[in-house]
Image (cartoon, rainbow, N blue to C red; front, side, top):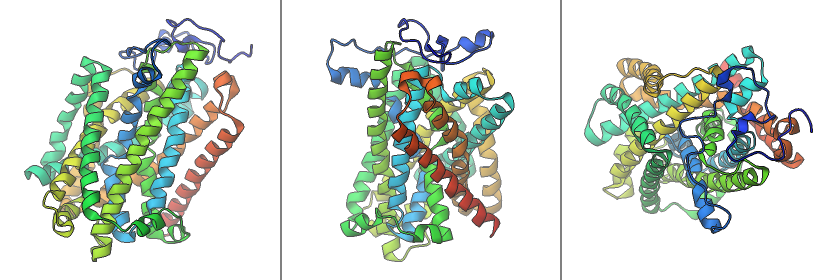
Length: 461
């Protein structure tokens, strides 16, 4: 058997990271599973039960991952894209969602097949200097994501309850305790909380979509890509922002970890089934994210672009105009409520991703509340500065910029992921096929090209 291949059979009680799939040092910390407090904690029915019950046992991680694909950062890019360019960028939302489905499936495969999350896999494979660079890129992405959550939560609290932006940003620190409370009750409670808030977001935008009554022909036309997206700098900037807001780099680390919370058999057959159900879970969940992201852009296009309000760029402006334009009094309230749910939900995944990345790359274990307060504190600083200098009108620009930063961090997560899942020495029989490998590298290449284009246009003014 090759030195790094996966053993053909392991006991279900053995930790998968103890296999020969990865080389470890002698340090005891190397034997720690990802998220050890919830590792293999969720029961999976045996083969005698129905396929539905077995599938439902794997439902949850995909929805937690999907949160990152509909967080407040998406709102800024989708709102501006719809208001300024109508339905033209719907094809970008579709493209980015298909990319997300592929990448999240690869992430789940890595975690299940090897028992290592992406951060641990990078630490095992790369030189420490490279790992430091990857870790810093991940932390920057999480801070950018947290920045979007702070802004979204603060704006929602201001719209719903009249709180000042700075006060709402500071108040958002308290959401760290939601994660601590739910994690203490069990991982299933955390997943149920996330799915409940996702349902609220879907219902809110479903009602607004019906009220907007967009033209079907315009929506279908928007699903067809055009060269104008690449040749128009403003449209390209928003398009890359949509990709950055949709394909979240830290989600790749998160998904490879939380799929291991299921107590599936750590055998080739058990892993194979776990990969299948986890892929279905994330694919269905990301189709929900596609609906919500498309709904935001479609509502913005129907309500603003087609009524002469193309300059709507701030969430507050959208809130103020939605009800009178759509003729639905509750539309603005539903918009703000969905925004608050999105900001709160994103906190859950951001906290977990931060823990996974720090422990995976650095083997550094700090209390969850301290980790959360540190990250949130770093995100509040730019919000406070922009609010003081520019007032509420500057946070929209800051929100969009955070999504472009996220897009620039994507290669640091995508390239290692594709390298690992296409390497037979690491994955054994779970290595992806040559066709899937080519497609995955094509996605990684497209991300790189778009990022270089963005950097060139930015530097060239």
